[in-house]
Image 1 (tube, rainbow, N blue to C red):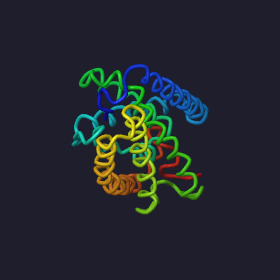
Image 2 (image 1 turned 90 degrees about the vertical axis):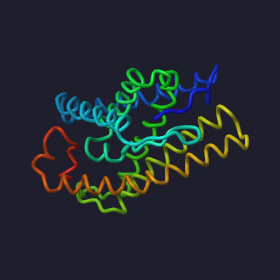
Image 3 (image 1 turned 45 degrees about the vertical axis):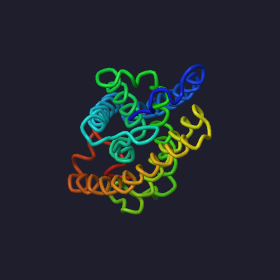
Image 4 (image 1 turned 60 degrees about the vertical axis):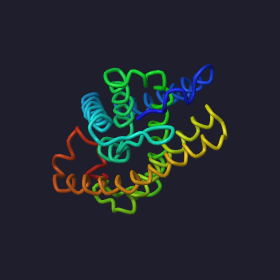
Length: 225
C-alpha cells in the first residue's frame, strides 16, 4: 500500500511527519492500556501475529496500482476484531515498514502518509465499533451487516485520507480528481469482499472458542464479559 511517489513532495511532506507522530502517540496510549489489561505477553504476541499478517497481505494478496495509490486487501477490520486496536495498529505500522525496507524502498519517503492513512481510520473504527456493537456482544456473534459497517468505515477512511494527500499535493485539477475517483471506485471491491472475510474468520473463531479465548486474540473476540 503506498501513496505514489511525487504526489506530495518538498516542504509539504512535513505534514505527514506530524500526522504520523499523532497516530504513533495514540498507538502508544492504546498499547499502554492493553499492557495494563492483558500484560506484555499478550500484547507482544498479538502485535507480532498482526505484523506477520499485514506483511503477507501486502506482499502475497493481489494488489494493483489505480490512480493515486494501490488497491490492497488490507483487512483492517479483521485485524481489529481478532487482535484489538493497539496490536492491529502496531501490526499495520510494522508490516508497512517491513515492506518498505525489504521490497519497496521507494515507499519509505511516503511512510508518514501511508501509516497515517492506515492508522487513523483504524482508531475511528474503534469508536464506530463501540456504537454499532452492543456491549454484551462477543465479536464472533457479529452479523454481515455489522461487519459491512466496520469494513466500510475503515476502507472509507483510507479512501478519504488518500484523497486528502492527493488534493494536498496536486490540488483540484481535473486529472487529479479523475485519478482520485478511479482509486475510490476500485476500492469498492474491497468494501464488498472484506465483510465476507470477517464473517468467515469470525465463524472459524466461534467454532474454536477455547483457542479464541487465549492471549493470542482480542479478549472480546469470544467473550464480552
